[in-house]
Length: 206
Image (cartoon, rainbow, N blue to C red; front, side, top):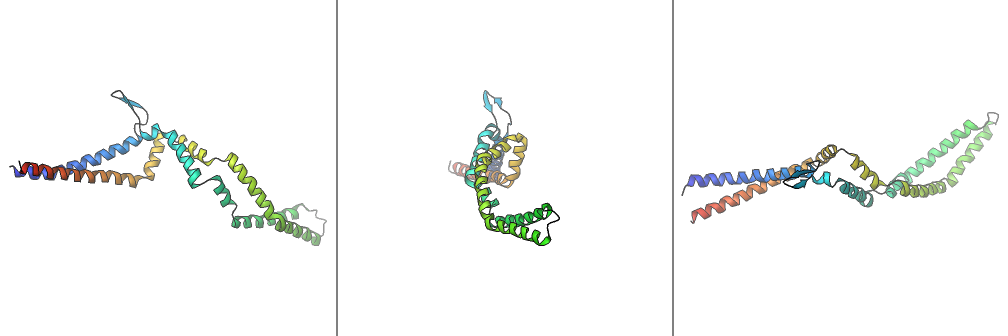
């Protein structure tokens, strides 16, 4: 039995397996994006997964985002929260006062001007929240009719150049893709090690 050959086999096979596993995952990741356009190879048409199904993927992302993550109602609720409502009504009172002082004729005595602006501020205090809530209801209705977040996301993704989209996805998931490549090498190493040990015992008991 050639022990030098067996030892060399035990050393090389795990590293060969690691290289094959790593390269296989690298190739698999590249095939997610490439080829960008359909090509014929041995009679089969090949194209990267994302370029081939971009329209479907972008539609699913848009629908999922709007359904599960952020809807138009969520945006309206955030824009019309109690805190923002208080700020808007406070600003509205200031604007009403400023505009009243600008538009009222100069011959009106100051005490009367002060009374008019105070009355207008009181009107905002008394009816402002009702007006705000009515505007909010109208805003929700308009948002639902005219602002389709899912469609906007879908259109935005479809507007990207394929290389730009590839770079964006790689940038966002670079760490995870690198882990997949390394995992392929680790799995390949252990497969090669198992094969080497199995081969050793087959030769040993032959």
